[in-house]
Image 1 (cartoon, rainbow, N blue to C red):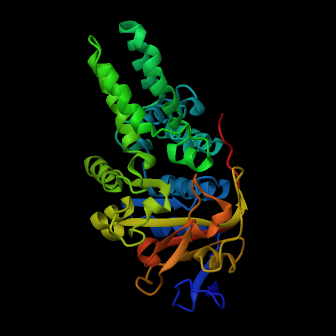
Image 2: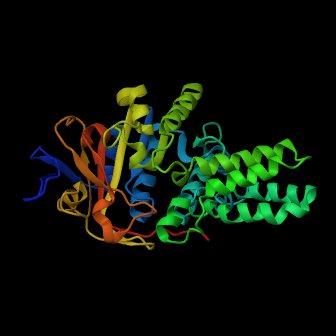
Image 3: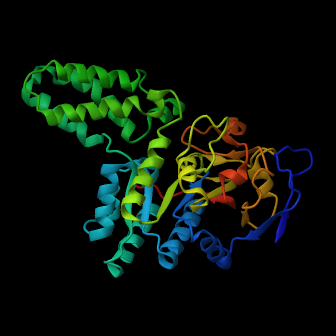
Length: 387
């Protein structure tokens, strides 16, 4: 075991001089999984959705928890209709994992997720009476096909209005490939707020006679999708309280134990920053107590393909972890509640700007209350993105 200490001249908020760290070897994975095995829900969060190594750590922990400890549900940050397609694939083996991900949120559309889905499918073939299920934390949302349904209806009912409604819908459907706030950050946004175009398209549709109710309901989903997006809200604060409640409801109804895959901003058992907005993890911790276990997986630096992330600033916890132990190691924070923090933890999202790396973080007032286990990988590399 190695001791992790704050480097001289930095202020990570760590007040415990000796924090034990252990190499992340085969035995460590077994130890970590065993220590999580009594939980009802395990949240495994990553500091970025773009790193192969952090995904691999989460996937390996997931497999051990499924194989050895009976966890049977994966909860994803996506919509219910997407999860239904993924669940159908892993239960039946029909089609391909890549095709099942066609309408999934972009961060899930990777070769690594394909491999994870194929592993679940293969596991379910051997455990047909006790399969792994996939659920979503979000209700059904609009997807790209809904735009086609609306456009086809207008083409039939009022072809003279097709060009007008197309001008509103075609630019904004791009948000289903690249989130609107990410488009703005990358300088590829067409200009007008997507929710405004969605509302104008809905008003046009409302003015037409003979539009089937199914088409109108799809248009309402489109409007809701853009109004409730990060760009539409004007904030990264989402519906974490509802996501946590969705997992609690499913677990209460089925009795099945859940592994929740997400980013650390959502899986944390403690709300970040001022704490005024709950995370899904904090809702789960409030409901389950210690039976909600939270794991954070971070990294020091690496070329993620879409961006090359430098070493973190010295006052980040990631810098402290990177200076200690082997290339991959883990820290058990249980029993240190109230003794650590506050700390800055690196978060690399789709709007990350390496020229402003110091801003890419979240502050956790008490990391030991937010996470039971910290896992750190020194160098990360890019995921295999699907076309």
